[in-house]
Image 1 (cartoon, rainbow, N blue to C red):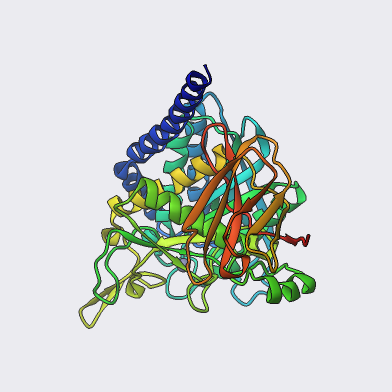
Image 2: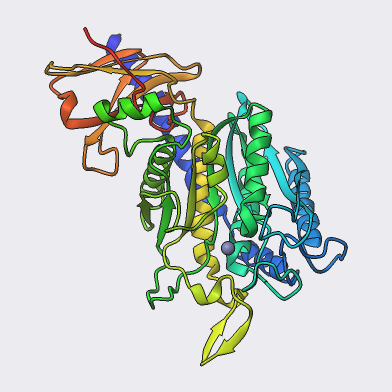
Length: 444
Ligand SMILES: [Zn+2]
């Protein structure tokens, strides 16, 4: 009888895992390069989407662009029984005190929230940018189609919404077009503050900025590699946390880094043809993106982008000089590649929004003992936990052990000194949370 029971349990587990797999593969297949192309074309056709451009015209400028994006989200919502809350979130920026602001203006983000069924106040966010710029960021009238920077990220975000609104998720998913990126990350800061004021529990931000270029300025052509930028530790950590790190580790294990590893792993598992490349830094050298304002407030957030940039085709007036064509025009965007990176986002949004929260408190022990030990607070909604570990020099969680629905565990014969450890929650459906790095130490 016992044997029979075991088989029943295993079959159930396998079918749950099977279901999750099928859903993610379905999502990958549903992302459409044609619809991404169509949206990038529409966005580029607004002429310029400079944050300080015309807001009255129906055909040119950022006003027309954001009204169109809002309309698109509303159409997507209609097709899913009004499953999206669509709204503008805006902040006023002034010329005074901002040397890259040509005149006072509203920085307007377009937000679409797909409410979670079980954890409505937990949010995973996918962002792209509405705005574009030419050579001079202060020039808000000259053509700036911004096809790759960043109509590609915006189109990917809308397409992910189209695909994922066919499903229901336990946590909320936010699809957002941000503005004011090019002049000071204003839109990201606005939404991050809005999230804080409304006590959003943010799982993570997947900021997509330039996901359509496959021909690097260096001549490399690559339609499989992409970058995931993540900062090592949050800037909000306390002095005490910083000091503890010296003794217990965690220099490369902040929450944004765990999010990056999660995306890396999901991609490797479900889209093995892709080469996700984790970059252990906040952003490109000395440059910025819209995940940063979220990081500033202590939220996990990463930048997802192409691996090979072409600087002749970003932040450039459209022109030809010495045989080189400058300008961010649609001819340079590879829609199949943008589709792949959109699928990367979509499966990670789906996976994160289907998983229970990561354990809040994870304590580690085993100092001068032969085995590492763990104690953690159980998570509402988790039906089991997985302990992950890796060599201290490895970028990825290479080893894991599913330990069932317990709140403490000893990893026999695994010495605490030689590895880094973390714990993920596992839901009944098989989906896993991001890995939580230990935040307490116990001795016994
Ligand atoms: Zn840019």
